[in-house]
Picture 1 (tube, helix red, strand yellow):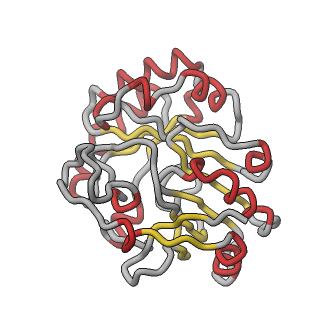
Picture 2: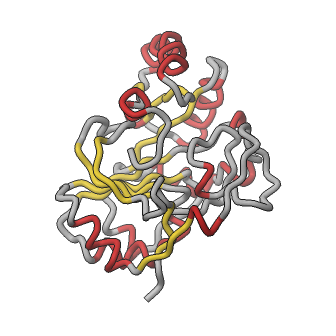
Length: 245
């Protein structure tokens, strides 16, 4: 049985915890979280760089910090992870990362052990879930990375994948917005992939309440203009930019 590679919390244990969902369609809902390690992209503003920006990785990140892999990753059997999730007593599970779909096989094994949970998976939209995993997913939170993320478009925006998610009613698109002009890129992607406006969220980029509130002031009118939803980042207001929250 293949193991899952998870991120670690501040104690060095696996980042498995209960909280409220901070973003997107189910914001405010009580959930169990599992944060997996590893990512195929490298966003310059990523607030979980400890899942991928390890020592020796030369891809840029605005903090300039790299992380020791051994201290920030832990591998566990799916059965062990399932037991820890069940102990949290929640009915809804959010799998986040990193990019969780990089670990599709062992992730499917995990969810087969938790058949009664409602499952959300956070993804950057570049990777397809294998069928064995896909049938276990109730909601995809797809966050395609715009130009300001620093990722080359040929890596971050895969036409076939975005078309597929646009046709899937389980998929909701969450675009990180740093400047008002970023919305033009969202509109271009919406037209190119026929994404329904009701399944698009605009979310301000930021890791402190002051920045989020400032950007939401100009983000709300843009949501009203284009018929998009706005996503806050509740966990930042509640707990700050911290692990395991």
